[in-house]
Image (cartoon, rainbow, N blue to C red; front, side):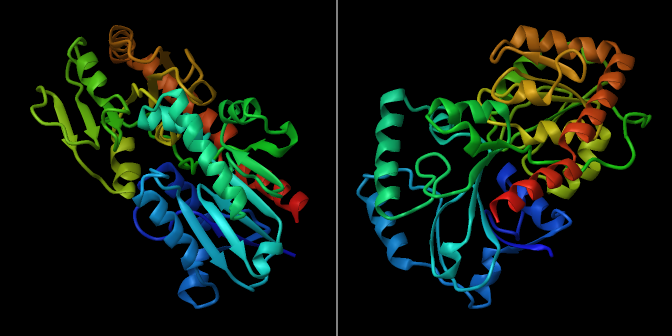
Length: 363
């Protein structure tokens, strides 16, 4: 019989703004064959669950008095609906009612303390102090958290070996941390052979952290010929000639137009735990030039599906871009190799098989 799984994570509706959003949407639209997901928002809208308002009020007050800032991505749920297990992704969660007795799987793309460094620029002492507070509060109020309080969770699913090693260094037992990449829907037909496929694409909502400014500096050092640079995300003004900028495009437009029309994906990110957009670009046959950071070496095979460059090295990044622009056959070869890598290592079928194994063992 199919497993009935309560999925607690970012909203199943609306735009897929982050990798976490896209992952939850992918689970719901392409689930494992023997799994039936029910997103928790459905239970709330149908009156089959309720939030524990006092917990949210308490944490809001702690944030207001600066004891806990930023506030955690907290959700609470009380329900007596019948499920085989609960999969929590990206959220900290407090469960009550019948669902609290079901096996719990926790999921996270990376590792919380590292994110405080990468995304907020905090120093080590501040990170330690903040996460000690979280750990104490989560234990006190029986809140599940993939980094600070596993409680009795069966395991933590992370997206990369890079993330797994961070959890192991923090003292997690090896058997409780499992790597399952988020999966990507690889198009049936490659776009690498399209005659009008040209130019360089960058996608990054957090323009500076994703290295958009570094890419503009690198672009000023290359001779692009007829190729154009397309920036998606951010709010840059006064762009040089040959650069197109779209502050926002829908996920559908990104998949069906921008990836399809581009030849190279440029991602000089300063900090990233994973880099879902790189995986999406590879699935569409784009050669990649990216920073050697986080889980990127697990996604991009350096010299085979693209090039990895030390973060912040504009000259080296420009050289790799120029090489691919000057050698379209190499660019096409790398793009096709990237598509095959995405298909074999990061396809939805492989992800779903691994997820179902974990679910069956937990339930």
